[in-house]
Each structure stands twice: as C-alpha cells, then as structure tokens.
Figure 1 (cartoon, helix red, strand yellow):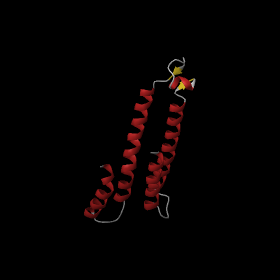
Figure 2: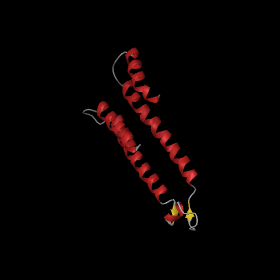
Figure 3: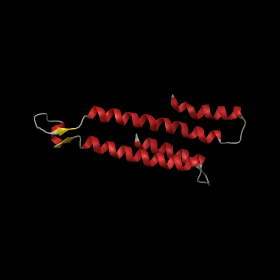
Figure 4: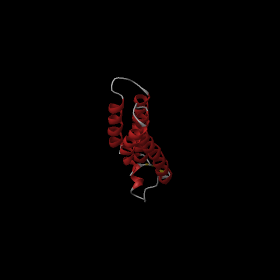
Length: 116
C-alpha cells in the first residue's frame, strides 16, 4: 500500500505543481513523509510484536506481546485519514483553476471516481 500511495502522491505533485512550489506541493511532500514514516513504524511494531519473536508463532514459549488488535485499529484509522487526504488533494488543485464552475465540477467528478 505504501508504494501505491507514494505513486499517487508523486503523480498528483507532478500534475498540479509544474514550475512552482505551491500549497499542493508542500501538502504532497508532507503526505509522502507521513505515509512513509507511518508504514515503517507499523512494520516495526508488527515485526517486534512479541519478545522473544518466537513467541509470536510458538505459544509454548513465554514472552511479552503487545495488543495487536489495538495496533490494527490505530493503523486502520491512520490509513483512513491518509486515504481521504490523498483523495481530497487533487480536488484542492482543481478548485484553484481558472475555469467555469461547470467544467470544474466535471473535472472534480472525474478525479472523485477514485472514491468508488
């Protein structure tokens, strides 16, 4: 999922910020950094969920484990916020374009099909 989100964010950044570093440029970079940090952090949380690691799959080994269901709910909430922000980012760029409202709504609806 990280690489799919990064590909979308880089594409959005390339479409809406050709020669200028505007708001969409900085939001794109912030989302790229936040998503990368989140996925790396979640990876290490699940990698070291139990100490010793063997106690993850071998229940006879005594160990100390974190509550994985809490980590899953937290990761899901972060993913939801990230997905919604990636979905809304191109809409912000479209509303800044100088074109009639009817055309803006048409272009926005094309970008919003990603919500489906």
